[in-house]
Length: 573
Image (tube, rainbow, N blue to C red; front, side, top):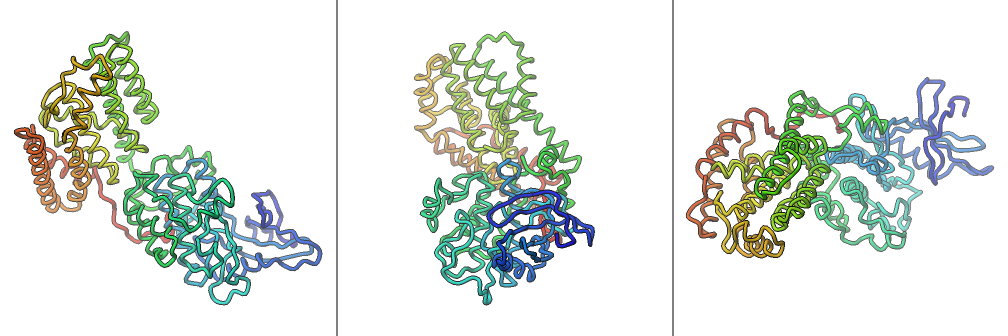
């Protein structure tokens, strides 16, 4: 082709030509060639001209570079940089991007769009299909690249774009763009936010079953991001929701959106993302590099990850043994064998095995005649996967709350609950931990911290009946302030890592003192509301909790998010 390029393999096709992998014999390099067939005598297409003219203005590692626009009698050719990797739409479809991957892709695209907007270029077609995730980014070459400027708008005198033109992809189009108004950079902000929304939730809230249905949703208020992903940071949800405002004047700039994404980067999970070698190999991204030295997993990180999973498995096995002991039912399997099987299964498959174990335990209790206890176990288990949906290794941790309270160290559980990086997970662990504690107090009729609620009966009175358990065990928890401490525990777990950060021993001690005062005040106030004399184990548990929290933060067991230090322009996971 053109006495220079050898077309080797077709990479894809669409309404605007076919893309080929080609070899440039003159410069001896691989390139991508978009071939746009034309009829005899047809001039070079306006879209091809537009893309070439726009590309001439842009030179950025986050934008696919265009090398040449050429034509012969058969077709028009756009020769561009070859980007080994996969587009974001494919990765979303395979479930191959973690929450942190999505944020860093967003940061990279904000950089690319910021460069384009400075040069008066509005992309107008930002969508997952036009976002390429690079397989082997060189130093400074980036991780995600924005492609296809074929419908871009030159904000200064573009003769190919007039008010009234509607170009782009309907499901990702800003409302003002769909109405044919003159677009600004705010239209790209909207499309980028919608792309990130889809990557985090798996769905595009604008796309309907038909183009007409999609068109009707344009310009309407979309469901908040955290209505579908409550585990994401609240500040991140606000930033994305603001970028999806139907009014372009109310949307943040690309720079502000980038800042919001970067601020929450360290609080997002890497679970299930591009850091997993097996997934990278399967998707053809085996050589994806990690962004910064402090983001590369160390031996300590790997060991901590393994120990965390083993602890989760051991806790799950302990829950099963505890249920066996309380019920008094007979099982053919040896308790230690059951413990080992559950522990290993949950350690290997935290979510699937945990759900299977919980369902099997409830079924076994019901079959043994302990249907009331089965209801109580189900009431404790059900909220955990709902509140900690993507954090399987954490699901067994609430079992520590009644165990620690039984030895007079109940507030120590808040240090465990305060370990996750995201505020939602800390709050969820705090609340579910107290729920399990309250259910244990109800079943055992023992005072572990505040005691069983008024109106509850001993296990023997309701163990054999679901209706009796609902009336004499569950209802007293719901009809009295007995679960009020769950709110306090959630808040105390959230604020702990904000006060004890690990950056300074002096500040950590001061923050620990403030937190301890809050723990004591909250528990004493709740004890007054509940009508109990005092919270059992409050003093000892709080002191031990503060000491361990300060020690853990100082040793790096719960490390704060590292400060940014001259990161490369493009974010890579």
